[in-house]
Amino acid sequence: MFAQDRSRHLTVAAGIVLVHAAAIGALLSIGPRLNLALPSRPVEVRFVAVPATQKKWTPPEVKAVVAAIVTPMPDVPLIEIPVAAPSERAITVPVRAAVAPAAADAGAPRLISSVEYLREPVPRYPPKSRKLREQGMVVLRVLIDERGTACSIEVETSSGFARLDHAAREAVERAAFRPYVEDGSPRRAFVLIPIEFSLNRSSV
Image 1: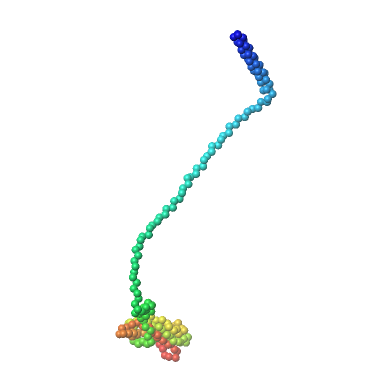
Image 2: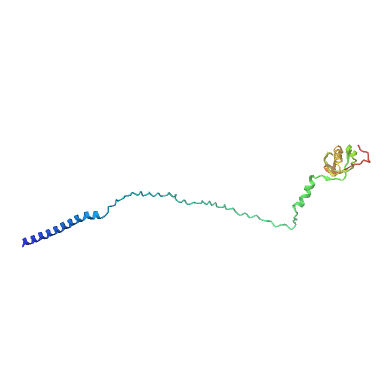
């Protein structure tokens, strides 16, 4: 019984070996034919360089901080100033009306109508004006100081001829005056002095 089982196993194993041997032989015989039937192509191999990715540097975001300086205001004490009620007898006078006359009379020279001469003005007739028969009257505005000197001479009314006006000024400059006296003291004063140039009168 044991011998029969063993022979049976050997028979099966031998059959399996034969089948494998037949399959391997068939494959070996078909392989060269397949190589002849299929055309052979060369295999190309390419190496592709992968570029390295560069990261762009971005600066970090900075937040602006505005510093606010707050200065506390000092506490100022309130001061109450008592206001006195105006008196019923009080008189309100404008400042200009009260001060202006006093300021005007303090040192301003007065305009007087006449003056006394210590040495009268003697005008000299310009020869060219006499030749051209120029004549007329010059009115001069003269400021006489406390010593009786003509310190300022201006032409108030012209004769119409510059030579005659100039000759009148020179005549008043050579004259001497008695100072104007007010309240016992000499004061400066303005006076209008007429000087006439006439060809019918005898003149220097």
